[in-house]
Image (tube, rainbow, N blue to C red; front, side, top):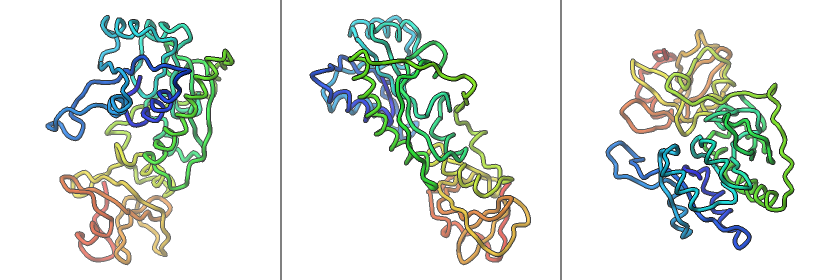
Length: 307
């Protein structure tokens, strides 16, 4: 069971585990417009991969209907593998005799919730990983089966890390299935005292607060790239910032959020220095590099500040 690109490497790895394992059903979301509201419906990345692999597919956006339970039960799975799908009701994850497990993009119990990869970067972590755990009623709280660790690059963004974790996670899923088949799982309870949250990303919590050290601003921007993207306002309109980097110039900023153009570079001030904005997208326009945006501003040392 899965929907986005993150789940595709795991699906391919599981499908390749024949004849030891047979993939009896792939469950994913329904076709819908994905490029824009008016674009034609498109299949989920998981559905596309499943069709390429010749696997049976069941599409549903409602996991609590009798029809959903009936379709899954009809497949008579021994194990259910979940990767970036939906919150399942207990009658589904209690159905397979060997259990249902989830692949999560963090080292649980850290970053329980919808956006673990993003928040690990936003918080400036140097390490993260993936965890498989048996599902239970409370989200992301089940007993841990196994995990794999990896470092986070100092300039790595969330999309790049997500792609890496999806490949690492495919190996974790393969190992988890082998452990379950061999009866070699010793589930470990999560330490609740170490639990942290990774809440859903919203318009409010992705807005840049310039009253932060430059290092924190850098982590915030890369932690939201390429989606949903960190944003601020400029001239009363929204401005997305896809990429930035700390930089050193002699001038000390007067106030956080102030803009400066230095040698054609577009700089924004944090509380302790400057951040070069490398890739931005003004509201209603295409993405552009920071220097192109800077050329559209008035010349001089200072441009209007962000609000």
